[in-house]
Image (cartoon, rainbow, N blue to C red):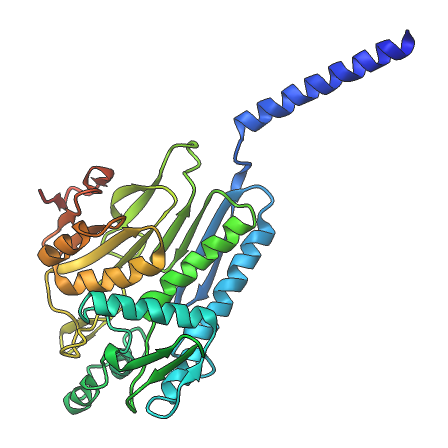
Length: 352
């Protein structure tokens, strides 16, 4: 009899414990921490910030930053020992075997170069090297030198060998600059590592390339409210919000990297056709997509196209949306995202 009572009490205790654990699970089904785990470093030539909202995610955060640092070493054309630097050194000489990751991003870059008819061109490196925008020695290049490099900015002169996993730049003096797509890929990789480690709620921001993991901390079905950069103020100042969940938003504009010479401002978004910064009415642009790598390339192409052509381009694209902010403070959005965009600054007007 005593054993029977003991077993009954044990079962009752287990039932109560199970009910308590179930109640806790319902209250916090995503294992969210009271405070996010956050880390900021200077990588990829910009500020890299990752916030993880799950409990006990310190190791996951460390692994994500390890991956970001590794990929930065492979992709940066400014680093002499990077894979891209070796590809550039061997231009017109020999193919270079690269990592699977670099080959994949190069393939994707050429896909968007072809699709955008050269509005996005990864072989713009010889041109960006002359301008050095974002560096201390940024300056308007000599006209003759700029004209000389126009001939080697041509994505059709890149030869890929999938079997050998090599990249060959056919003309001497060519340079690949994957900055317009690699940062997005690296942001995606940071998100992938976090998810692999069990993280379900996080924000990765690598200098304007943002991936939100899951829904916001406000609720399981509540999207993140991501700020839209005010292109007329410093980074971090917003003029509106857009609702997103489990997706990427890539933001760029003429405010991001620029310099002034002889009273004129020059930004980093260069036209492969002329060698000079694009001259249009766009001050800022945001692309919403499933991943930041595609968003990066599309953003450059859509900036080059201008508002009217760019909206048509994006509206015909599945799973991609756009927000344009023009120099006269008007905000244009693609058809599918319009209702999810709100303007918080009265000096901006949402165009119909």
